[in-house]
Structures are given as structure tokens and as C-alpha cells.
Length: 206
Image (cartoon, rainbow, N blue to C red; front, side, top):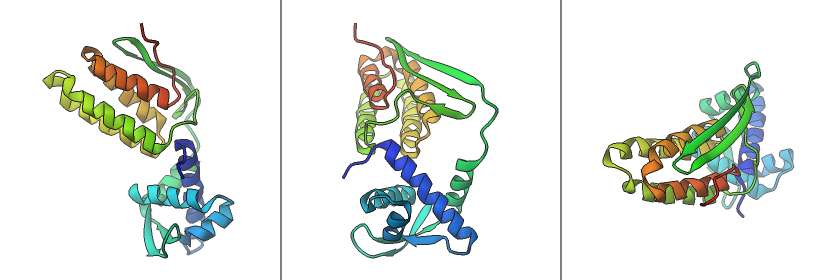
């Protein structure tokens, strides 16, 4: 079963919050089946979120019981992530960011302080976005040689932001790529596809 980025991000934060609380009480681990019951979420979603958190280094697998049932334990990185999620935000300051490429605005996002809220949050799955980023990477060789290394780094940042649900990081990477990609219609096309996948406004074709 495929889940959207919003579902994976929300589920991951709920799992980290529960395991953080358990850690404070001396028990920072749980079975995915137990987590599904406590959080009232499908086991498949809980297992997918746990796999994501393991990849991010925020959980470790303490025991594999087959299928979607695993015993997971929160790591130091997971504890920090759970604490960061509930830390009070910076004083609000409305921000509108317009990211321009060779054909106009690549993405627009409005938010307050350090919390950025895209105009549309649901839609693509993580697999969908990963595939689109792979298409973008395939287009990078069409850029001038002097721009490729920086563009590859921006693509890395874009993928990391997508996997961790950090939209501000995604938009910074899109801005950088939009500036670097002005000489390549192939790169611009890939960026437009990514903008649509993230649910952000993209320019219309001429």
C-alpha cells in the first residue's frame, strides 16, 4: 500500500512522540503492532513510518517478527527529532517566497517563522517524488559543466527535504535548481513536474 508524504510525516511524528514519552518512563521501544493499536493507525502505515525512521537513523530495529511486525527502539537522533517537533516556533513573520526559473515562478509558498506551509499538502507518495527526483538527476548532465556539481548538491538537498517532510528545505533546493537550470529546458521541465507533485503552483507552458 502506498502512502502520501503527509501521511508518512504525520505518522512518523506520532510514533516518535509516543516512543519519546516511553523513553522518559524507561521504555523507549515498542512493537509495530502495539503502536498501531495505541495510535489507532493501520499496521501497514505504522510499519512504513518505522522503516522511514530507521532509514533516517531515528529508530533501530531491535527484533524482526516477520512481515510488518518489528520491535523498534528510538535513538538519540529520534529523541532530538521528537523534541524539535514540539519546540515553540519562532515569532511569526509572514513570508512569501517566489522561486524563479527560466520560465517564471517554479514554486510559491507562504508560512510563518520557521514553519512553512505549502498551499496543498497531500497527493504524491514518497515513491512518486523519488522517481521524479531521479528524472531530474538524469537531466542534470544537460547543464553546463561548471553548474553540474552545485546542481547535484541541490538535488541531494531536495531529496533529503522530501524524505524528511521539510518543505522549507525543499523550496530552497527548488530555488537553487531553478536558478541553475535556466539554460536547460529539460531541467526546467523536471522542476515543473516536481512542483506539481508537491502541490505547489508551477508556470504554464507557453
